[in-house]
Length: 311
Image 1 (cartoon, rainbow, N blue to C red):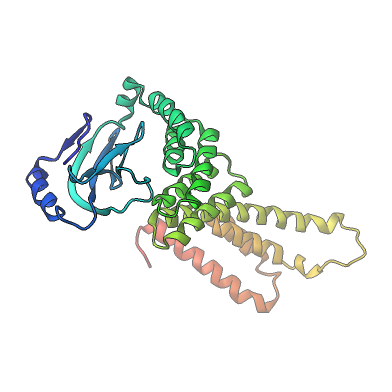
Image 2: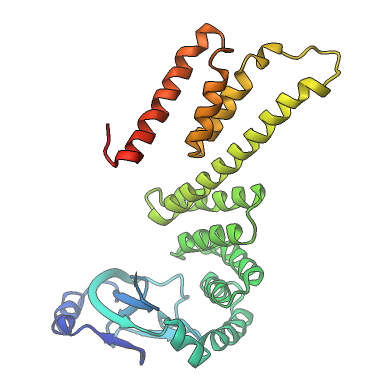
């Protein structure tokens, strides 16, 4: 049986394969619940999703459960206790129900949130319900509510070993933690959820990409802090009156050299070169070779930018 919603359409090229695919999985030991290839329209974008189960046998004791985002289950067996065969098949369904213009007209989000609230009260230990509740709350812009629902999804998923979407929970929690604030603690919290996902599935691309994005933002913040600390160190020689003597060799251009490094990392090459040149005559001989290498690197980079050609 192939189930298609009213806002979906089977790709015409794939129509001939429905019977062929169904026949391949007709007599499997466990009922086959097959995932199709969804093409979701989001404005001008087309997004791919393989999480939906739409092709399954009609006479092997399967049923739909749930008020919304219904799940295929074996009659009389818990949703996460059943034995089914899950595979992804090449049947493409075009879906426009997530197009923002259509969603506004149908008030889809409001309806979904109301139904999910009822289902969460009925099934408080179902991680799937809390996942959907959190995801729909994010779409509605209710970020704090979404975060609470996803934390509940994570908690209940720990007690439901056969629940298969913990990766999605971790990804959404990471995105939310970052959206709720760019402070260090929030960024580290977001990174933690990415690391949880990578523990579950080390090659999960979304978690790796998001973690890299977070680390780059943290590196930018640390570079900014480093600049502030260096400025404070330089000014501290005028104000510091402690009994422990400071290292006066820092005044031999070492502070400016490190400030130049910070500027170079941020891509401010002209400022970095100005700082490097300013300390050239003050640095000890042993450190000048490194300085000349830095200046040569900046010259190469700026020549490439000016010429449009690598050298």
